[in-house]
Image (cartoon, rainbow, N blue to C red; front, side, top):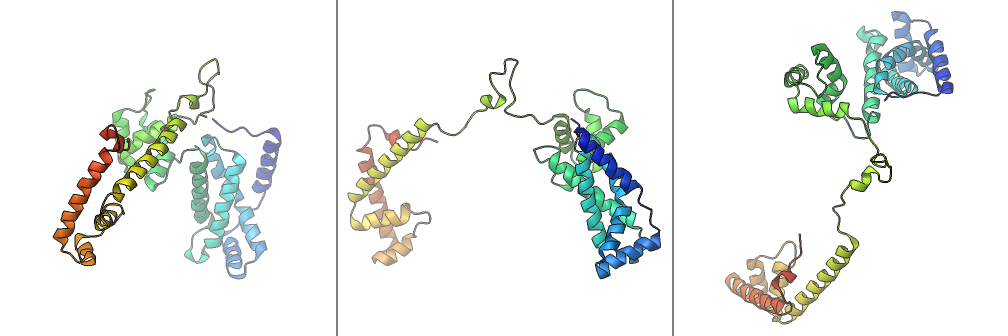
Length: 294
């Protein structure tokens, strides 16, 4: 949906545009001199005259982006940022007119602004996606695809080839451009008693499940602590250092520390695990009480 400025904003925009259009057009030599004075001497008057003269270029380009539904004043402001960047980087020694050089910076600034604000969902992040966003409708109109329910497969293929992207990228962007943002707080249905967010499922556990989970975790921790107390000090040390840490000690390291072979450590570990299983099962009525539900 196109943005509609209020009457006061429209008058301010019109006044700004009229003033910008009255600025004199610069000759090649004069604009080069202004650019040099700004670059070498940081002469503010030279910068002001250079930027003022080419504000008409910003206004002209802003008109090309109006159909994206964004305020004309905001587009002009973003274009002016691009114009300032161009004046900062312009090199008059390259025999290129400032207007030609500045056009790229102005267009880039406006494109970035459109991509950031056209939708609350980020639309284009890669160069291919940006190219799709700004050229899809133009190419579809050129191909004369008039289907109402999406593009035909042939149209998608031709656009993908023209922009050097995948057909899937074309189809995804077409869906994004054809669907406007909608608020989840908007009423669902004619009665307006419920909003769209009321129909969203919440995958998180409810408060009752959280409390039950905390209680079960505490119970399992207590059972494990009691079962470990039934092991010998050496068996308990092996289980704690092998099974109850993220990166367990190796059999060889434990054997060296305990003064036994790593095969003996393995035997002690297996015996301790058997004792733990028996001790844990004795504390529950059903084996599945020992496991956490996924």
